[in-house]
Image (tube, rainbow, N blue to C red; front, side):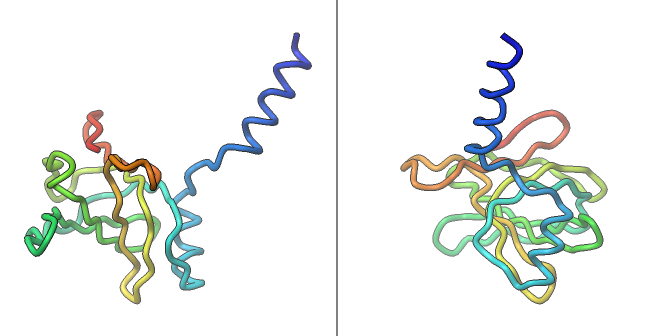
Length: 128
């Protein structure tokens, strides 16, 4: 039975695409890579005004692995995350490169099923 489980686990690891660590995000920043799914842990360093053009988005900056990352969270599709400066969050979404560090969006469920679901976890509660 042990060998069977090892084969199943190896197959699962091969087929599944695990979230990239914040160290990988630094590599993406340095190489100018965009459109990749990432999972990062960071501290909220600044709250920004909502973007109310088109779909409404909550915006805030986090510091993760010496990078400043803009989090762009769609509040028409998901609940607002009640973050304050100094809070820690896990963010899973799509990384887009920019010269300031990059941004992460798609931090919500995709109702059409055409994109991986994202999330933000804050104080043991997940928002998506």
